[in-house]
Length: 151
Image (tube, rainbow, N blue to C red; front, side, top):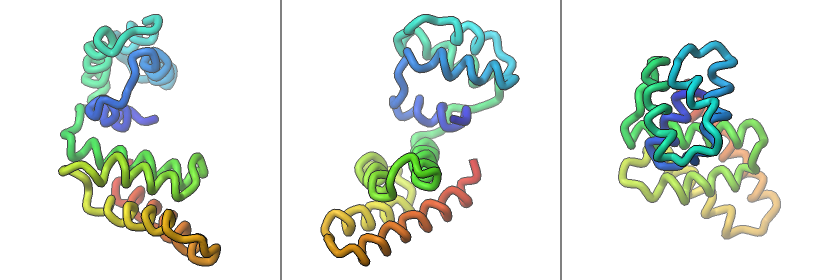
């Protein structure tokens, strides 16, 4: 995951401290130069409380700002859209995640409501041809969103 996306998950309290050393190691191995990231990479099962200062410093060192809550929700929606497009989740699961975790927030991007409507429609139908059309619309909306966000 890109540093901007990790910063968004951090802002939204969706990260676990024990996952951060692996993330930091991947960034260091890819050439991101930061003493804080190197230190974080060598931590053993840190709590978020212990890892947060190193993560924040590491992000600062590589010129990545912690986003506003509004921007973090945009980036989270982008993560779900990429998962849909990569086939990591079926369209309904991705749209439902956007509906459940983003649409309910005051700062949600306007486009999130489309995913919510499509997920709700999928929950309420059993017709295969309609399911196929809704899944196709979810994929199209995900493509459009990823292109717009461009992260």
